[in-house]
Image (cartoon, rainbow, N blue to C red):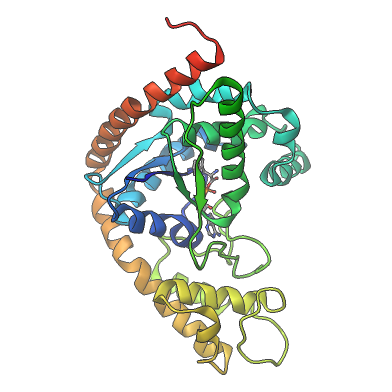
Length: 332
Ligand code: TYM
């Protein structure tokens, strides 16, 4: 049995990137005889300027989309991070393992702290310590594999480093996790700015396809996607032709094909975009339908989360207790 853990933070409406990079991989992993935990990492949503009512609303929506995407609470554990105290309990111990320099080298910290500073907001201390809390999320469950998109690779590597360092210093305590990335679409790019990641936190960008966008909106966004200048036709070249390569990646992820092979089937961008739009609409249609049903019964979603938190707590408690003993804290 492989223990899997992953999470999504409720900082915006989920995007096609979240679906292809994370959720869809999770549903595939859940079909194996694995033990899998998937978490709405709500504490992580508090590390930048936030509106409490919006975080509450988005937390419910992300949990509902977990189920709508096909995650089955009979096969995996679905829960809210803030409902399981072990995450913050372990995070402190890992803060005593990590260094300040290590935190400041994290790419996402550099980007997000620069943005917060530029907009005149202070940089929250929790933004700096964010990767430690993320390491705690992972290590608290003896996680072996962490299925994420490419942008989270550095954070998962930090979790590995902290686990190894702790084990060397205080004796074997943590399982050392490894990252798993999807074969295609590990980094879905913004349709208007194909050199930037398609992100949920950037507002209602015309280059971002949201999982709950209406079919007409999805088509419009895809048809208006920026393609690259040059007369080389449709070729798959991520460096030189990032816009077209992104569309081919998305099509390959939706249809199960290979992006370079797909490129050969097209002579123009129009036909490619139409096929991408159709594929994305069809991929998301069942998820959207199921979301509409589930959103009408929030009590059922809350019940899943309550039961999930109970299971998660029972798994994490002994691991975190073990870390407390190892680092030198007395048993209560
Ligand atoms: P978050 O909430 O930004 O994203 C959730 C998941 O979606 C993936 N993803 C993408 N994949 C491909 N293309 C994209 N454009 C794209 N955008 C997002 C992310 O890689 C991620 O897998 N720090 C994490 C949340 C987290 C976590 C954890 C993850 C907290 N604790 C423990 C795994 C394990 C984050 O901000 O993801």
